[in-house]
Image 1 (cartoon, rainbow, N blue to C red):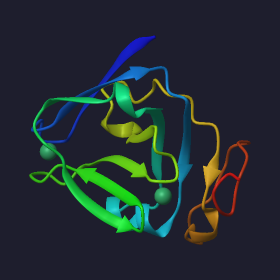
Image 2 (image 1 turned 45 degrees about the horizontal axis):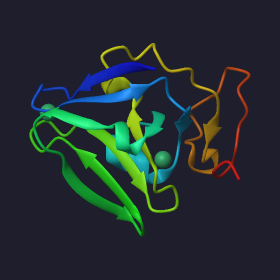
Image 3 (image 1 turned 30 degrees about the horizontal axis):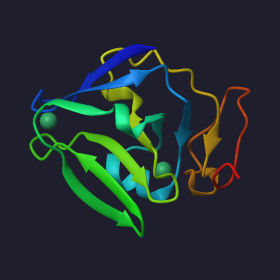
Length: 132
Ligand SMILES: [Zn+2]
Ligand SMILES: [Zn+2]
């Protein structure tokens, strides 16, 4: 068990969660693309009860039924993702961690939404939708 810390771009929000992550993947879904303004988002998953803000408050966006995304209201950094289908878990954008090299990314998901000019060049498993 180790403490994983992170922050938004403008430092208004800082957080801690207990590592290591339970899972980490690249998500290409349309919602993540729109939320981040980016072709793919790397997420790492932790026990929700271990997540705590050490500075600031998240602003919430309900992007799909049962889905709550948390971001910084000042700089816009997307930080958290929670899904009612996985009530005990919280996903955190890997690149807001103080050590983004920490998590081990192990899959590509929702590649049915991947843009044609985005090429996957590693050997990780690829899922057109979510992992069943
Ligand atoms: Zn911020
Ligand atoms: Zn996504």
